[in-house]
Image (tube, rainbow, N blue to C red; front, side, top):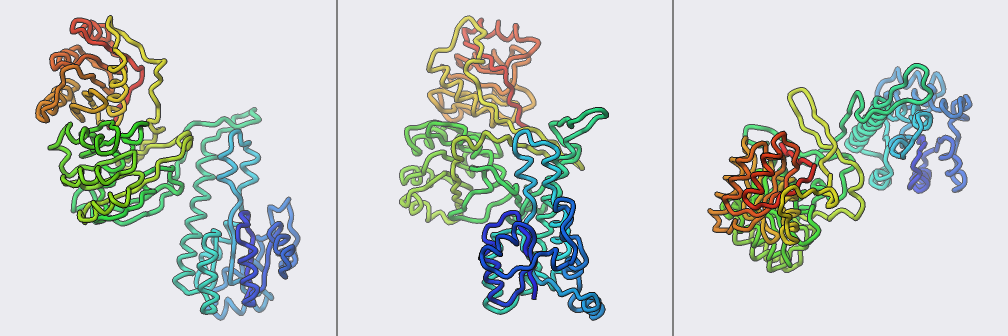
Length: 524
């Protein structure tokens, strides 16, 4: 029995080779891997010695040989295949341990040159992996150090690797090759080399974009019971993102639960102070800051108790027993927080259907990495950079005669963050670090303004003296008239309308303070 080991990531490979050797497996290897095994005292044969053909072209050609690929591809159940191996003196290779040149890590480095990227495109590795995976009935192919221990334990316990394990390893191997080729395609198809140029130009978007996603779970159904669905995640999910959540209790998450939970979590973690956000149908129906989780929850819930029924509640601080008991009096679909006290979990345990998720907040600086948003259209995909832009206080421009006071400015900042996560056309009334009325997803900004005031009135909240955030500019003065008549005192909006002068004049007539951000936050 032979094993061929050729790895870029040498984590655990010496221990793997040692345990294979103890079971009588003969070791073949290449280059640096062979030298590492030899230094560890293991008997290893260089592939060049095994094939009788030296490595050439600076190592570009070393395993592309019939004594390698014939040994991997020969079907053990076909006598003619085995006879061919015997005729050409090719011993079968039963184990292949390969991980590929670090192309992804190489091109992730700033200013990576084309020559460096090209030299980190593995040829022999993927070829061997494909050969071994195709012949999974006879070959165990390992492409990740994380696989070593489980497969070794099975081999040592029974003297063989089961067919089920070999098939799973083959699938993982083909997945890895697909990921690798996709990374190469994405990188190179964003480059273009024009006649006479020495260096390629880089485009923001590649000509071909290849997605690689891993399934987390099948879902009972999609948005509606007649639709089928599953939940996938990026191969490298961003720290603090929903796919990394741990479910501590409750029913299985539904398609709509996941969509709404993502909206709630992304909104609440935008705040630095202790905050609670309640989401219903992808829109915040209440958000508030508080001295603790309970006070933040009570203020957020009071914005719109009717809509909060069956909603998603998210905190950016640990949930304690007081907060848990407060929210357990209402019907909640999903609860999200970075931590829970033992007493809080005990208080929630009686609500067996409540889905309780724990998500670690991302470490400082981790969100500096650019993210992409995708939206599927029929037979197509829209891609954009994520709306991660932060409001720059220095870029704010007071355009009215009256400037907002300090308290009003703090509430304007708060309302602006909530509006960013509210479907367009978005209007958010806020006061004292909490929402008092939210209008979302309307075709008319005036209608969103009216709905927000109606929501506030229904909840018995005081709009008088509040501030308002609008995700996009007011195209006419009518929206300003409505919010002023409701009692708002300050407005934050992007500006940029051809009728800005008319809108500013209306604000001055009503004695409103108005601030332009120069930044729009459409959310469709």
